[in-house]
Length: 116
Image (cartoon, rainbow, N blue to C red; front, side, top):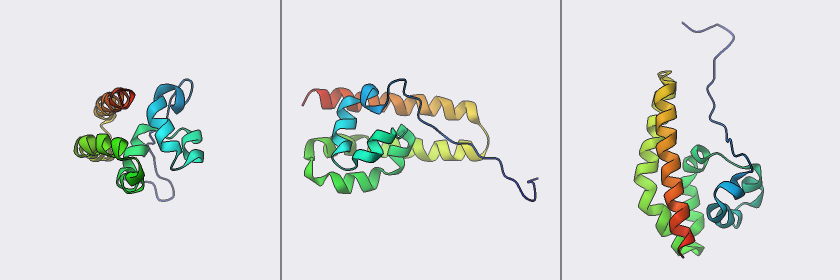
C-alpha cells in the first residue's frame, strides 16, 4: 500500500572518487565533445546507458567510439531494463549485481578505446 501523499524513491547516483574523467578518461574525453557540462557533472554509468541511443546518434562524427558502443548496446540496454525492473520490485541486492556487470562493460569499453 502506498502513502496518500508520499512516495519512496530509489536513485542510482555516481560514486567516482575523483570524477568520471579519472575513472573512465577515454570515455569522458569522447563524451565531452558532445556535452562538456554533462561530463563535468559526472553522470553515473546507468544514466549514460539511459541516453545511449541519443549518444549513438550524436556520435556519428566519432565512428570508432560509436562502433565500440554499438558492440555493447544490446547488453547494456538489457542490463538497464533489468535494473529498472529490479528497482520496481525492490530487489536492491540484484540491482547491485547488475550494476557491477554494467561497470565491467564500461571497463571493457575504456580498454578498447585505449587501443585506438
